[in-house]
Amino acid sequence: MHRMKSDLFASENMAQPATVPGMSLQNAKSVKYVVNGEMHARQGSMIAFRGNLQFERKGQGIGGMLKRAVTGEGLALMAVRGQGEAWFAHEANNCFIVEIEQGDSLTVNGRNVLCFDSTLSYEIKTVKGVGAAGGGLFNSVFSGSGKLAVICEGTPVVIPVTPQQPVCVDTNAVVGWSARLETSINRSQSFGSMVRGGSGEAVQLMLSGEGFVVVRPSELLPQKTSN
Image (cartoon, rainbow, N blue to C red; front, side, top):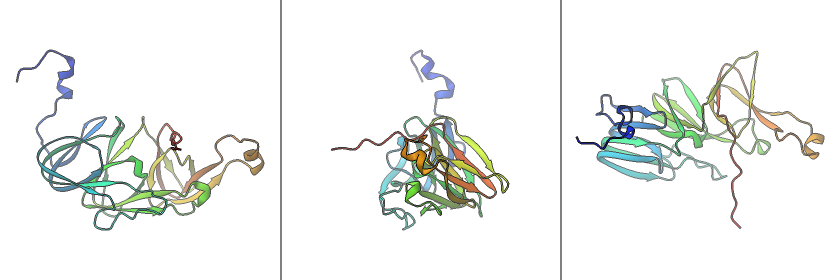
């Protein structure tokens, strides 16, 4: 194949023929999926495909597993069916593949989900112990057996959680955690301090037990509201 001369065509940038079925990293910013049957991805995340594939919107979830919370939280999904290859990415976020085994359960913020095997069960749940003070936190719980691609702005930090040392995380920075961890709200400043303007770090999610938590090195920017 004739190519123009450019480092754009470096071998590490070239899509290679599929060698394994299912999910693999194309590079740090995108995931390649060899589809033979069905898989699931966030809507709008497909950047290219080849082969015989169909994309079907799953606004209210797949097989009733996605329960859209009353706050409008949720993950808009699509099913990808057929035989072929597809590439997924989201705003040049870093991509990581997590292999979930039978008996495992992983809680992930919906904004950090890119795509996953159809063998995984997926459900939105309210984070226990977190009421309105924590922003009414809803997360996606994955269980079963299969691979899940997670996206993260910047390089994530994985912090071990032990019974002797719980970890407090900013709810806007948390990516996910071991689902077996106990969750609660931690108040790190007094009401008086909050009234006086506070530190901007009034309430965190506390995780306790045995497992890990993943955070990203940035917080959500305030959402713009239309008048």
